[in-house]
Length: 516
Image (tube, rainbow, N blue to C red; front, side, top):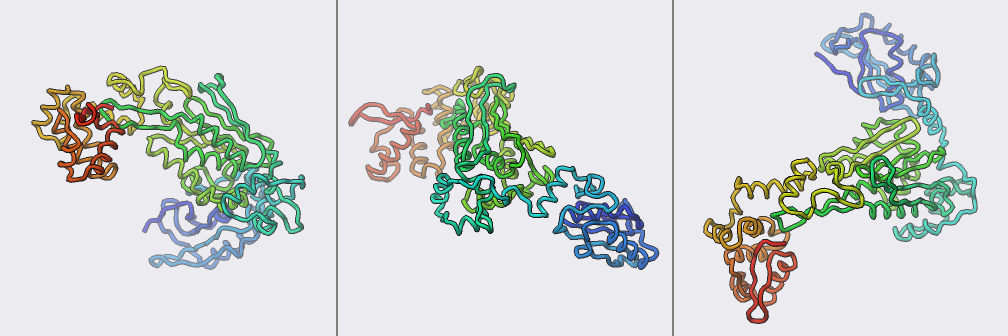
């Protein structure tokens, strides 16, 4: 039998005082199990004197780890295929951090579990763990400013249909047991001194400044102001792929990712630090830089959905107001949004700083795009523009896929829409030319029953079979519908550019030409 070490499993061939590192790491993390009698390769070798080894382990743990872990540790004997082992189970500790008595609360004595390894914890994180265990959060401490007003908070609570009376404020942690305002109340108050600075630049070197927005006052007001500024600065690129009726709109940054980045900035900020929170939108990236960051979990764990809030009461307040959906979904959700774009957000975590960088969906590939312009091929251009963009790898995946289909049709690798017979396709090509005929034929593919209804699809098919046009009565006969229903279908297709209208009054005819 062979076993494998993991984040919650570690092996020791024989008893050694070094096993205390694993005990400390498990207690400081999510718990785990240590087996004595299994070598580093996962092979079971057993323990010669099971009772003596169990006693050694118990004594070492009791004497060598602080605070006491006896209540969260179980030492027992285990028999696998007739071979005796010692099993040490360690639960996640309630009084973190735990350390080696011989070292104390320094990185050499405080460990956490990262994969199958016991990793020293940085000094800043150790101090933070001590403060959290002692209940010393910034947000629960008494505010130095007690003359607070809550006009913005009252507006937000009213919108969420949640009362904001004194009882509610106590329950949420804005007022402490003695009736004083806490720092959490300071953050949501109109007197909140913690500001956020946002800037928009036209290049990646941050030398071509365009605009800025300062977030001041209540964090509720700041979030709204910053989000409004970033949404205005977040350009929407409209791709008119030649040969298609519809356009593809692509925001430079997914708006859901932008909002998650803003909320992450406020929820996980270290408000005891004097370092300001900064947001910078350059040509190819949107960066959120914050004092603080993940404390007791790794970046990988945070991206996978792990949560360890620096300001848990603030996070809970946002949850109550419906501003966040659940704990631990922010970075994970951002990563999922970018997976669809074939890109990856960048996360950098340091002991005293956290940076989230969102790539520009459009400009990171297209070197011609800036926040305020386009110096290259026209996104509303003709076939040659898109050929160049595709050749340079400058198109987002879904736009590239749409153009690939059009290019395949143009180059004759794919026939026109199979819903049109060969004779109809030949007529379209003869009367309209190949490019326009492709556009017209593609209507049957682009106009789906789900999106525009069965009548619209039937009428498009009917129109493609009559390149010279048809009357309203012809359409009524084809659809089997009355005048009003037929006109609604025709008008809808006219608005979308699928049909064109020719003539007036009784001479009116409609024709499908496949032109936008």
